[in-house]
Image (cartoon, rainbow, N blue to C red; front, side, top):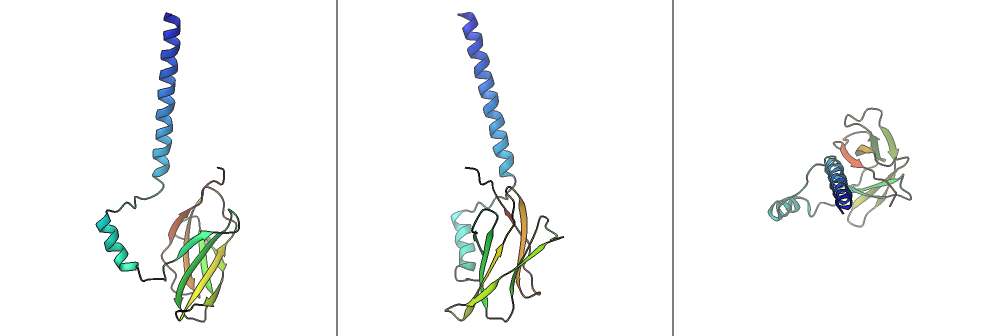
Length: 148
C-alpha cells in the first residue's frame, strides 16, 4: 500500500511538472506577437478612422501553404503593384513579387500580388507599392505550421 502511494505521488508530480512546461512554451509562443487587445471604446475609435477606407491591404491564403495573396485598392495609376518580402525589418535582401491590377467599380483599381516560396513557422516582413515609389512601412507576418 505504501509502495503504491509513492508511485502515485511520483506520477502526480511528473504530471504537474509536465503541465507547467507546456504552459511555459505556450506563454513564450505568445511573445512572438504584440498585444493588439483593445477595449470596445478603443476599437470604436480606431474603426471610425478606417471603416470607409478600402485601401487597407488584405492578406489571404494562396493556392498552397507556400503562397500568400496581397490585395488592396488604390487610385487608378499606370504602375505595376509590387510586394517585397524579407526576413528582417530593414528589408535587406528582400524578394520582390510583381502582380497585376484590374479596374474596380468605384473608380479605383484593385491590386493583386501573390508571394510564393514562403516557409512554415517563419516571421516575414512585407512592404507594398505601386511602381517603385512610396513603399509602405514594413509590417510583419508569421507563417504557421501546416500540420494539424
